[in-house]
Amino acid sequence: MIGLKTLLQIQDLHTYFYLRKGISKVVNGLQLSVREGELLGVVGESGSGKTVTAMSVVNRVRMPGKVVKGKVIYQGQDLLKLSEEELRKYRGKEIGLIAANARGNLNPLVKVGNQIANVYLAHNKVNKKEAWEKAVEMLRMVGMNDALRRAEAYPHEMSGGMAQRVMIALALVNSPNLLIADDATNGLDVTVQSQIMDLILDIVNKQGASGILITHDLGVVAQCCSEIAIMYCGQIVEKGPVTAFFDEPKHPYSRNLLNSLPERRITQERIELKGSLSSPLSLPTGCVYQTRCPYVMDVCRKVEPSMLHVDDNYNVKCHLYQEKTENRGSANEKLA
Ligand SMILES: Nc1ncnc2c1ncn2[C@@H]1O[C@H](COP(=O)(O)OP(=O)(O)OP(=O)(O)O)[C@@H](O)[C@H]1O
Ligand code: NI
Image 1 (cartoon, rainbow, N blue to C red):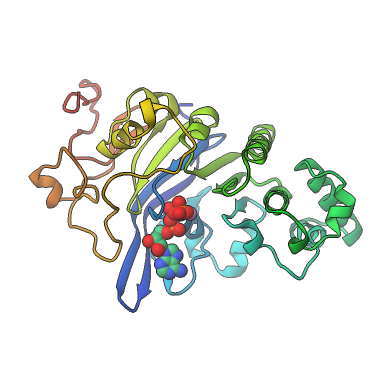
Image 2: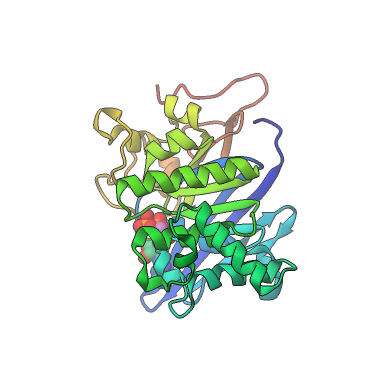
């Protein structure tokens, strides 16, 4: 995978919520890049800011939230600098988003077939009939029996699994270059979950697209993704190839995550660790993980670590590590 072109680069992203009780710093200087053809799994505890990050990437954070700093560079263009109208050319076309909570993101008043057709119409030179046919074809592709009849249905007439499939059809109808799936299978039963995962993988592979898979399921990441990023308090604290990560996670938080799994078994259970995340309303100075870290040092309470490049395509945001220099190899002895 070395040398592949970067498709998306998130630089120093900060997204804050301005609440009555203070400023909630939900995303704090997040750095992340996705290369072409890569499927990146993003994992983190509930509340670590995964969804807010996904919404920030497509500039859909609304008051009281706001992206206050940073860049989201997609194929050389900073998406955060675009007007709403310019952005629309990217959303639903270049970038497909499967949002958490499918039903809440569908329009309750419009037949699902029309919702898909409208997204197709907006980006393609076709007439209404052709767009409708495309919608039905998409519903078929996402595994709906009786797609023609389903296209005529309203969201409330569908089960959660069906609504999720509609969301996927919507996200994929214009063959996006980048698919962002936020907890796409959350709340669905296990069989439907794996069908939907297969579908996403199949489409990403067939279209040569890139994907960001936001999930609690380390097993899915181990099975499906080429890269993994670990999120903590609105930052990516570790990112690297999946095989290297599961061989030897580097950040103390990642180690804690894997060790918390029964017999290091990778399961589908939601991640829950002892102690709680620092509140985004009062983040400590220095490293965000200092309050839970067994290796905490003085420097961690004073200086925020930078995202270090410790090995080929491998990054860790932790004072225990040193930037890889040409002759030194990876500095990973301190945790051994
Ligand atoms: N509209 C909002 N107003 C205030 N705070 C918000 C809002 N949306 C999100 N937050 C806060 O941002 C933080 C991160 O939320 P987010 O939904 O991104 O977490 P997540 O990692 O996606 O969690 P989960 O795994 O449960 O989906 C939380 O502390 C949440 O309370
Ligand atoms: Ni979420």
